[in-house]
Image (tube, rainbow, N blue to C red; front, side):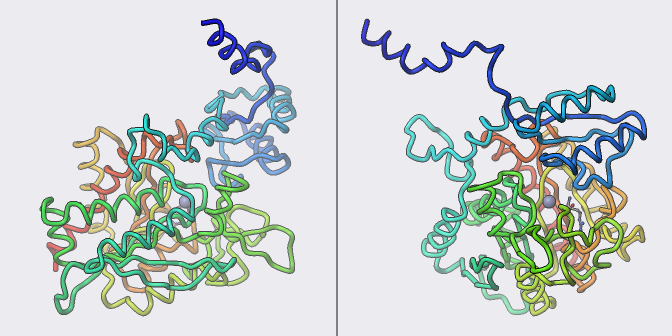
Length: 422
Ligand code: ARG
Ligand code: ZN
């Protein structure tokens, strides 16, 4: 008993010595709603001048009155930032008081923990583990799964696409899904893994996935931006862009979803390398963009549906994001996402907004969905998965299954509609 007590005291020594009220300042995520133009300007300034990471909106440019801003504030700039807000009478709420605990939770390797009941697919995985998973999935399913190397990243990591194909029907069409174009959106690669696992497990038992796979092949790119993803695991959890360097600047990274050739680098993107929405030196300047674009160009006659998976904010988007003009089959696309959102609401009681990107969020040129659409893939979508800002990019592993199941339902709903049409 005594030994146990001593053990407990030793284990909790740091907590016992450090009362809660004088706990160290921690990283936090703040939610701030500017009320006046002056407050908007201050916030824009804070998010660019101080070491912070803007979660929402994607760039300071979009900060506007009466709209929530989510700002990750590291401990070392916490005091300065809060002082500044206070001085200008800008109120804030703490959205996340413990992002570091959440990050720790997400990166913990609990696969060896016998108390853990979560499956492989209900956890986040390092890039290395995902490469191993790709290999194993192919080996375990040699008849259905092929691995295709479509190129490599700036830091020379391989870009692997999994091809799921259950039969050799002539003139078969295909669907494309890419995940992880933005590094910090961890639920996205988790979805690609989930989708593959679901397809392999429920082909023949779930009628919808059976119908889809009988009629089309699926190409899945689980991590479009491996360098960025790796960097979020090792160095900076909030990283968004790829990791390319350029002689002309010390800032690293291009926003790969601004680097495609669709009204490239017009309003909604930036030619400034230090911003989060840097469009790159020219369209397809990045090896990751080029690999995807080359693959889709050479498969454009068979790929009917394009999906790009992001987070967070719960939206089902379709072209255009690069212009306010309507897509040629706007009403058809609207009908599809409306039905998908309806299904999610019916089965999961969760709300997804839907519509063309530019009207639903903001102008964002150079995106992969618009580019694929202009290439001729008439069913092109960008999904923003969970959540709506409670955890943001730090969605806990316990939410992976719900987030993936509802996105899966949306993918199935849309794919079935396309299968029906052809
Ligand atoms: N939130 C994402 C971004 O900022 C997706 C935008 C919608 N699609 C697009 N093509 N820009 O990149
Ligand atoms: Zn994104």
